Amino acid sequence: MRKEIEDRLINFAAMVINMRGSLEYSEICENLFGQITRSSTSAALNYGEALGAESRKDFAHKIGIVLKELRESYNNLRILSTSGLYKGDKVVMDKIIDECNQLVAIFHKT
Picture 1: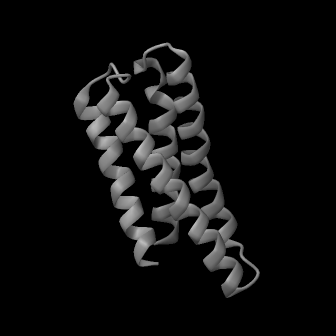
Picture 2: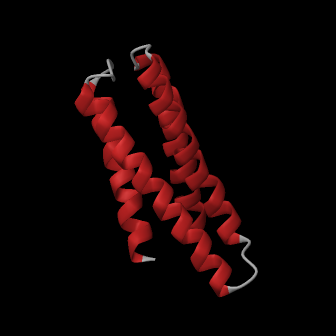
């Protein structure tokens, strides 16, 4: 199960990175893309850190960071989609948003 979740987090971060070509070029878009790149990759990286946690408290703290970063990513995706800054296939964006939402639900239960 841990490997599956880790893979999903890595794939989610890759989906976010790969959507760059479908974003409008503007200062605000560059800012939002920088933020979502950091938050989506941070979720994957912090999950890896959580797996190597030194205590239950350390594990819970790192999982909390994963959830926080995923929530930030989710809101950022919604902003990009709603604002029209994302110029790609709506189905692709919907898939990325859905995956993020599913990951939030998984970590909310943890």
